[in-house]
Length: 345
Image (tube, rainbow, N blue to C red; front, side):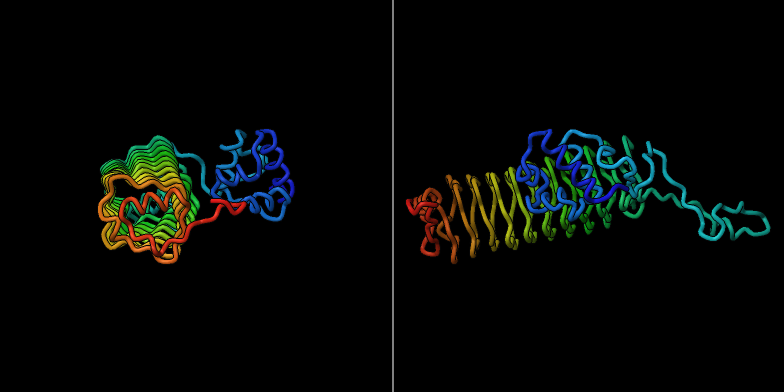
């Protein structure tokens, strides 16, 4: 593998050729511009998933960064499973009549984990969680499949269809989910940590008890989603649309909602700390909702019910948002107006 400084210089070269600033590149990757600067100076290096994303953003092949760069995953598999070999011999012993018990001991075990899967169809299959853990997937179908307890760590899942699948109690860590379909999926008690979810369709999905930690949703469709008991910590939601969804019994800590829309939604038993920037609430009902140490900027409230029941504690808002809330009969005593730079409102 080439040196960290060499890869860093190639990142800088490709970024400049694409006429993208460090800040813009950082925005695409949901990281800080300081992190990009460290890469380019050779002080640190992105992992394989981030390098894949960099190649996509900058319009270069992954090999551009290093001719000798190797993914920890095996070769791409087109619908063919890997056969797991016994540790002792490295191959399967043929069962004999003298040893009938060996038929049970030497039963084939299909192991598709740690693979790269492309254009495979596993719709309707059950108990797949162990078989696909830590796998990269592209344009695969898992419609109506049982993937509960799935572990993805540092993976790339792109353009796959998980409609009506059970992905509950799964752990998604440092993974990029891009343009996938999760319609009517069961995602109860799933945990997303340090992951990116880009332009995914989660309409009708059940996120009951799901946890998001340092994870980011961009441009996702959350129509009719059940968020009961969801926990969000240090996450980001950009351009997401929540329509006819239920956000109940949630804890949202240090999250950033940017250009998020909430339409015809029930929002109840929610404690929110974080930032809402250019968000939109229309025809929503609020019950036992508290904003604590939150900042609301350019956020629009239209035809909502029970705004007066929202508690604002040590919050900040710009003038426009403040007036929307006041006109909606919200109790704004716990909101301090944000003073724009220059000191003029």
